[in-house]
Length: 336
Image (cartoon, rainbow, N blue to C red; front, side, top):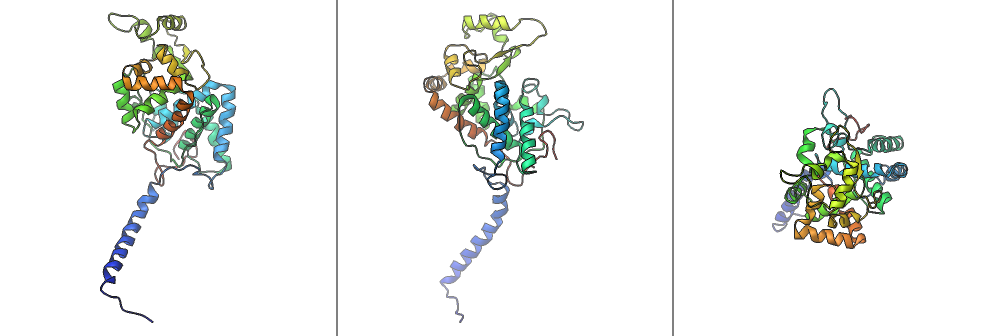
């Protein structure tokens, strides 16, 4: 039996109808840009993260420096166009100048073969499902675990970008000569805090650097001083035995000479001792805020480990592509 609609019910029905229409209109936007989530591949490709971890474990066991390279790759990817695997794209006749060819990446960035191997293994298990951007994020997390027992769960669901431009590496990646003001601005432009800046700088406790990245501090610091006075003299003397002042050779040295293959808080002790390679490292002592963070991280290794994982997650959220944006590349080196 039907009944008539009373006057009091009309506004309610109208409001519900408006809400339903508005919600339906929002659905494309919601589905187009969903947030990242832990366990994104739980049903789509349940073994994806384990497969990547196994590949990274083998690579790091053979060469710890590759693990450092993968962590650095994650940083270099996320700071240019967001975490979209644009750093992996090879030059082509149509685009001969990709991020790989940019000065901050060429020739020092390494670990590409690890990502290739991980992608190939995942593709055999779940074709066309797992993005290269997520594989970099997983690989960096696993490398941090194997090198420093730094453990965290990183959300996933990133999509791969189709654009890679060499000049954008210079515009977005902070060089080792940046002062603190410049570093803060660089990180803030990516939505990252001063604490993230200091925390992520701890990755300089692993890996190696080309002498050319810091040789100015040793031989040609200023018009009045050949050597950077903020560098410990004995450390500078040691570096001079490894880095020539002239010649075409550009050797590499460990960024942390105390625990070179361990991702730990030794970096902050080195900063306090003025025994770090880059001006961008030593500049962390030029403000009370960052100096206090350095001191805390130097004294509390467990605190720094926890914060490093949290900051890696924060960085992994920078300008990500999700939902229907971008693509899932078949090969990480080329767009589909």
